[in-house]
Length: 278
Image 1 (cartoon, helix red, strand yellow):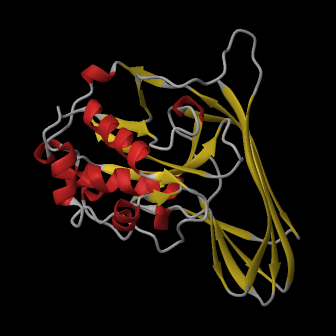
Image 2 (image 1 turned 120 degrees about the vertical axis):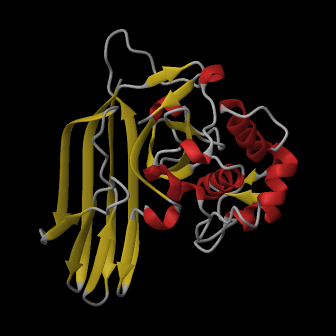
């Protein structure tokens, strides 16, 4: 299944500033980038870098006074691994791979330590495994109103659990916090989403079960088989699509994710099967 994804971002720079972007699709075993372009106008130098604990692809631009436009376009082929959900089990902390352990800890936006009693009360008696993480997503979908503009960059999972309103970022943070409170490693994912209305960057999460990461999205705004990963992190602080240091005014943002037509290939659809990503 192939998708054409990308974005165009425009800014006014009111003084020389530094901008860090994280909007390129990740190349991995299930996401194969067939074609990719990145254009910066004016054509400024950019420095690409990564971090030791994530596979995200960041790049830094030092921009002078004036206008700045960044355009990204990629054609990506997804090769999903579908697993029968009944076979997907939780892993005790003693048996988790060492590189997964950081995703058990509380983080800035996912205060699992503050939500431990709530998580145990709501989900502690449920059958461990994929079904319990699904129950967490169902709870969030039913108990939290998806309301644009109801939160800001300071809103945490604890806030969302008490205020019961938020957007995709908040739904993901709450799902992560509940999972971690139950000793299930969970990480934040930023990506492009097929058939998302209105088009935008999308946030969801992955939980580590059995021997790999699995996709979960409590918003139900897009089919999980139509999610294309940009980056992962402990929470949104690790995967912001744009971070500014200086006087920068965002002007326009266009985000798109379209399926590439292929004879005999159906459009992404919602499924009850588990989708593994790595």
